[in-house]
Length: 557
Image (cartoon, rainbow, N blue to C red; front, top):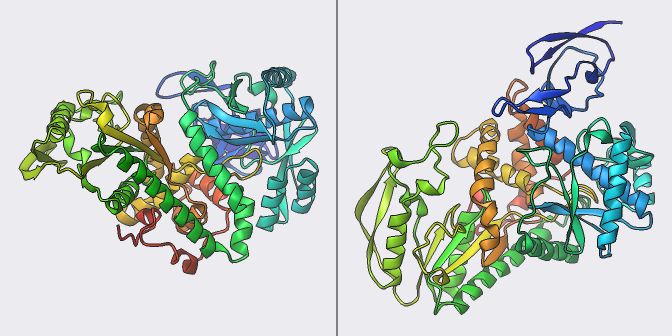
């Protein structure tokens, strides 16, 4: 047998393996997080920056990094495996019911049985069966088979979305995973066995339950229960609309595009979104005797800028006169800016803003007075006053957009009844199949990558490497307050992933294998490969006022 050299990133050592041996031969039991010093069980491996399961056989020299739950790819591997565990348990306990994972919520993955309400006793039985399967430490296995054969398997298992997606792709072969005799397919590797999945819980919610997974900071405990009712309603409404269009999955979307219906889909999506902005304006107008301030918040690349402009347009239609105050001009001087745990300036912290001055200005405007607006010079790190004045007439309303707009601590001195708060985010209800919902985070990352490369000259690799920091800020400063919104607006559009594939695919392919962003680029390319791209003539049909134009260019707002 030939001897293969494996360079292990985790300990800096080289290991010798016989050709064909799996990575598990040299895998450590745990990896240490460089930031916290905590140990995490190894779940998978990055082989030359590409994610592989621990049973990956070695035939050539490789650079290998073993990853645990502290790594994004480790967490995704855990969640995929946990989803299969829940699917297998559901088939065992309720063989006559069809199990589905609908979407991600703050308290976990929202699951239900098709067309049925899940009773508390059903959840107890399902939890016990999952624990039994974990205790038995059953292996996850996989094999490559004909796609046509896999289609038939999924049809027999009452999983038409899986079968439809495979059919829309036209591939000859696909990888199918097995657990205790049940087949499924996932879009990435799984952990070696069910024994790795000891930490989970099922939380009753709505008509189903949330499948809860480990916390990032403490993998011995599941994520906490969080407020999520308004978000759930928004996702449910959008999911219902997707059903009315017949596009509830990527497979159905692909078929519409392959049948030449892209322009029709673009038009109906844009018409629906315009109605949504008009509805927001109606709510603001109905409260015009009380409300004089509109705050809009949302995570990165959720379309906040376009949404604030579209809402302002619709308010003008009703006779209101929107005026904009840019919250970015209310930063404190640089030497007063707080720092994060790494000693870097934390411009996303609430304390980075001059809240006292902002509160004073808003109260003065609400009382009929006039204020001089600041302009913040980011190079010098301090605000300047250049004589720009503002006051509010009878039909004027203030529109402000920023990450802290839903935090009640931003302007505690201002009468909160005078404020209308909007939360905007790209909350897609589109699914790959019955078990795999599309990450809204991935959707926003692709949006940002396309926009930043076009507008700011930031490379795709840079966007990927900055994304973890962006996500930490969202988790800390935005998501905890999303239920404070008076209205939530979904900026997702059914056609945007096909549009984003057209723009993002070539950008991702520029990232070299030596780049630390390569693993994420490969994962996103693998995801986009399931989606039929829009063509240039179809993209031309996207109107210039569309929120998508904020990312691809050509916007006239």
